[in-house]
Image (cartoon, rainbow, N blue to C red; front, side):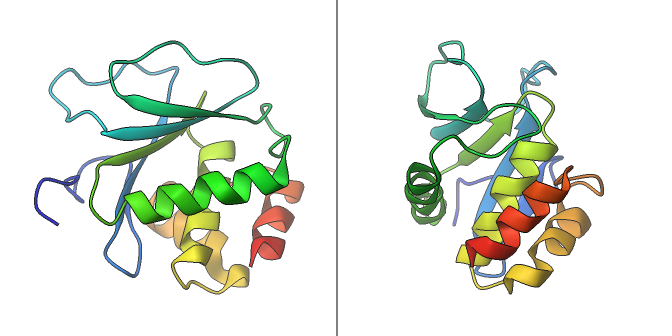
Length: 143
């Protein structure tokens, strides 16, 4: 997986398969020395700003769940597939609730049991990831 994220970098989660996915909060400026993604998914309640790399907007209001669960499953499936050979980023405003929930769903797609996915993301990404009870329930039901 040469050319992908440095797993020691802040915000990079290693899934059991070895896929690396960067989670990020868009409110914090991107480190100008950090590598840019080749593909990103932005989990926001409104249209994200334009960026110079390929991205997709998944409508997802702050502290809530994705507006379209079928679309969310498809988008996260694409993220998981693309992370096998590309630098993929998942981000929301703060980088914890929606991003953590998406990362936990990606962990489920990667084989982590749904009941353990939130703990997996909290241990490997951010200890405060997946902020609300309904986000935790969404992950458990994602499997």
